[in-house]
Image (cartoon, rainbow, N blue to C red; front, side, top):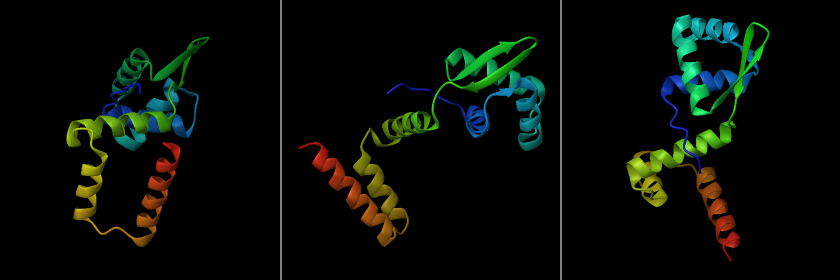
Amino acid sequence: MERFDLAPAEWNIMECLWERAPQTGRELTEQLEASMGWSRSTTLTLLRRMVGKGVVKCDTEGAKNTFSPAVRREDAALAETETFLDRVYQGSLSMMVSAMTRRQAISKEEIDELYELLRQMEEGTK
């Protein structure tokens, strides 16, 4: 799995792009100024960094740059989850689930969903 190492601020930009793409630099800067209070230079700096990382595509049309996500939300979320799992739980999904279920109540519906996922995984490995 490719690692994207998105900073929290970069996730904000990705959410905007996953919601609607492509967007011009002006559209993104206006949107993020309104929602996050960011300056134009902050947004454009982050966009340049993200293009360099390969997570955002920049197309130049005339004098305008348009930006779109280069990775799917699902792929970025999976990579982030794997990074978190490795960093916090030494890659152990069972340690994470154990810790989460000890801290908060889990509903019968969630337990049933987990059983179903495990059953499907078990059938897939046979």
